[in-house]
Each structure stands twice: as structure tokens, then as C-alpha cells.
Length: 193
Image (cartoon, rainbow, N blue to C red; front, side, top):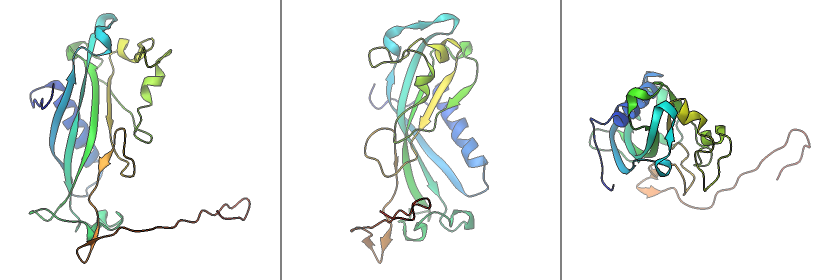
């Protein structure tokens, strides 16, 4: 369902709670400013039911945020001093999010399994035995146990999958585009590529 957003929906509370924990992990000034659910698939998995937990739904969307480039804790972010600022002086970003949760959240085990994506791909579904394209839940172990599965993008150098959208650093108003070179040194062989 395109453009679907519900701040009263349990999925929103889950994402907001999770993302606020990320912000609480460090005193650096950063925050999620909005969450928009763009697609809701309910029921998910072709309507399959998972024991006493029942059916699942999938919520996909975008979480937008901002970070303070003047915070000394953010100085480790490459070229943050060259990133464009919004009217509040913050650097904005957005990331894809995906949530798979029981439709009736009172039947869940109230546990989020957060999966750090690799190259934009979800890996936690492989914890279920027999996952295939035709059978994405496999044996449904995680779902039968009532887990809520959450993913968010964090890799800015990919073009597909679950990703983060980062601003382009500007040097004197110009984007830092062009050819880059990288040398990889192997300590074992003493050679470089």
C-alpha cells in the first residue's frame, strides 16, 4: 500500500524504539526525524500462519535522520565538515528499513532480532531451515517463535538492497567526484595489488 504511514501502528513503535536505542548508545547528537512506511504486505509469506503466533506482515519504508557535524564525537565521520547542512545546521540522511512482525503483536515474543545487512541483503531469514525464493519463510522457526525481524540500511556505497542515502561532501561548493585509487597491502605476501 503506497504512501502508508501510521504513527499509531505497532511497527512504527518498534522502529522508533529501536532507532532511539541506537541514538542512546552514544551521547553524540543524532536523531531520527521521520519514519514513513511506503509498503505494507499483510499478510506476508502468502498468508502462511505460524503456530500460536499466527500470520506475519512486512512493513518497508524509509527512516530519515540528521546528525550534528559540530559534535566532536562525529568528527570521525569522513568529510562531515564538507557535507551540506539543513536550516538547523545538521547533516541529513535517510535509510531503507524493513520490519517483519506478527500481525497480532500481542502474540509475539516481544523480542526484536535486528539483522545487520551485508551488501544490502538480509541474512537472518537463513536461520530458518529450507529458505528458498519460492518459500521465503522456510520452516518458519523465527516466525513460530514470535520474533520481530528488523533491518536498516547502513552501507552508502551500494545501489540495490537495503541501503543508506548519504549526502555528497562539497569542497568549495563542488562535489568531490572523480577517479579514486586504492592500494591493498597484504602483510602475508608483502605484495600489493
